Length: 441
Ligand SMILES: C[S@@+](CC[C@H](N)C(=O)[O-])C[C@H]1O[C@@H](n2cnc3c(N)ncnc32)[C@H](O)[C@@H]1O
Image (cartoon, rainbow, N blue to C red; front, side, top):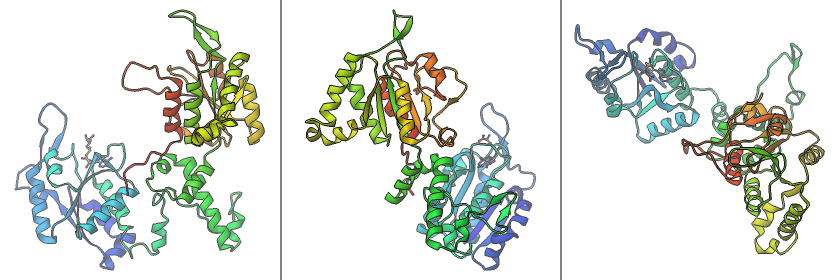
């Protein structure tokens, strides 16, 4: 593969191209690198940049300079797959790298041209005209695109057979599938009080492979859940490992310890009535997201009778044959008289007290306010999780304070925030536990 780079700082690439695997790939004629100075495409005294149109700070690279460079370099090495770099570009990850490598092969391009910018970037028309892809290496702004270009080269070259010694190291790379790579160890066996796991020294290949399988799933779910849930193709075995490593989740819908309307403005602590819609819909959402049980808390005897009748129909009565899916979802519903009993049941079943997450439609304070990306923080406690939902005007401030965490409200870009609890439950289960496949591989 021919790699050409058009840059304002060619000297940056000398050490890069003459070191490590990139050098070896050149020595072995697997890649052939060429670095061009963008200034060499300007006429004497011609500037390569110009002020941006409209008010704005900084200078941008002129289109005709890039045009000259592209024409000249393609004339020498053939039509190129052209990559530009910008913080506004597509976020680089292993999937995108793999996709781009595949696209190059499909287009039978063996010439990769990288065009890192400087100043405020390039005239936008250049990218429109030439870019096969515009890449960002993260949500931050660097001085220029040269480091991103080197990052891109390092990542892409790993896909080319024979550059990295063993192809299996590439296949098992972190982010090649839904999981990160497993942790690796070498001698000494004991270092600063940390021991290499005994099993890895056992020579039992099957046991080691199993351990690695478990370990990659555990690590990935805990520390890289956004990646795991975003991976588009998980095998049933991987799905099982993911499920196993998400801590047990429970949900409780409180009809006591909630605020109820006194008049249009004021609220008081009270008790609400159970609604069958909340029982059905939240049960179905819970089962969809792998939540083990859905507790309905009401201290009122007459309300308990209603819930028991409904649950009896679906859990043991004609509901089983009437709609088996509904039966399956409603089998996970448990009636309780207060929150302490719910906590006690979960503690008994899981052997650990659950972490309580309060939910509220209103913005509010809490010592531990979390958002929908804080799974790692909660899950690293290695305890079951109980999501606490309110009815009426929401959970009382005392109950919210009692919880270990308070989740930020679900909000749209509007001033209206009056979701029903069953709608809010579905949205928040999805944001907290749901799959969220990104682009296809
Ligand atoms: C100073 S930056 C221009 C920043 C520009 N004002 C913006 O916010 O998008 C100059 C050049 O550095 C490169 N660059 C900076 N940060 C980058 C990032 N996170 N990913 C890829 N390229 C980046 C791009 O080539 C960019 O045009």
